[in-house]
Length: 224
Image (cartoon, rainbow, N blue to C red; front, side, top):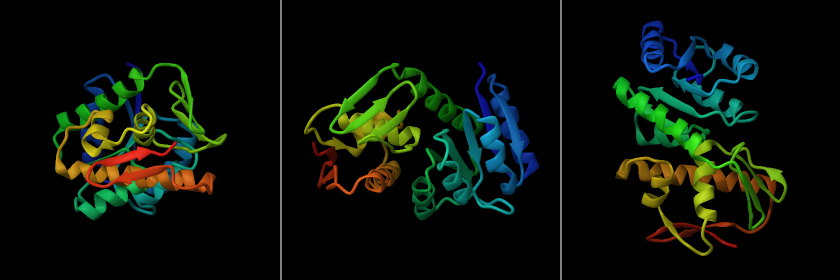
């Protein structure tokens, strides 16, 4: 197992506990304690996954996530004591793939890490072109009208499901299945956050009509 995980946590004891947790399952890790050091390190070292606190010295996690999303789609999990629904949605809207609240169980963290690496491994190495979109399931890059969307892995997975069948509406529960998440009410809002991000990224590259429609009482679908 060669996956490399960056841990960004300003409390050294918690950082070491996380590092020991992931290393026990064969993952390599590196710890950073100051938000100001994160972006340059990520650019130089390209980790396979980032575990990041929100409250950090010199630069907060939300800002760091937005900066990282300008050049990388690396899976990023917030691990934080900021556990309100607003905090969760803000975290997902900033580009995070997952949001884990403290206090957390090490097995929960490992389960979510393993789940996202399984998603990566389960993608078949091919390319899909449909309705103006191009999805490369090997590089996890998505394009709309030849312009890169810079989606996170979760956003990519959701868009791929929406595009998989013409005119089909997908419920939030079905989209959670695409992310290999358990179905419970608290996570339904996370789907709304991901959809909001996808819509915004599409709008940023094209001024066409809305291509993701809300089907009231059901969920979402792509308008071809």
